[in-house]
Image (cartoon, rainbow, N blue to C red; front, top):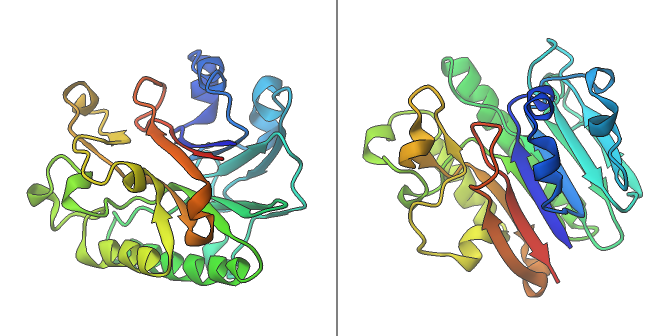
Length: 254
């Protein structure tokens, strides 16, 4: 089973620019998209209901063309979730999850901590609420969560760690939450297979053409709870897929 996560930075743009079909050629069984920036009814038919997939969407309730997530699956899930159950954290269309026979899958677009102390506090509140939420689900069956976490965990996960020590995305309090996730028993599946691999990034700043120079950040993750440890087969970062300032990441389960 192949799971893929991709921050598309505008799903309609990905489709219009011809990147949708090359992405589907990766043949995921389940895939989650973040920052779709669209309502379900704004999407073309090929994107809203691609052949062979069940599709689910959660768009921002606060403003159009902002945030938003989608989850696609070949297998129909038992149940779909779009809320943490905390109204102030459920307005921006950041979460969509599904229950399957053997595990839960959550696709999440975690908040960016930029824009001042208030947004950083919002990000950290979302982090804590999300972990508490999935830990409750995990008491029922294993959990996989994937998406744009908006934080590089260790110095190896970004090209310029020293220059970003005081910038959101690499702040100690943000990184401490990723530590907490790992300590709770979630496996960073890419690092599971490539513990020392350098230069492995999933996001690059478009304004500075950073992708051309591979001056990037690894802020997109697939985490699997340790109960799934023996089922982890491989992980990848698909830097050859274009159309966004992020590239897709994947996990294959046996």
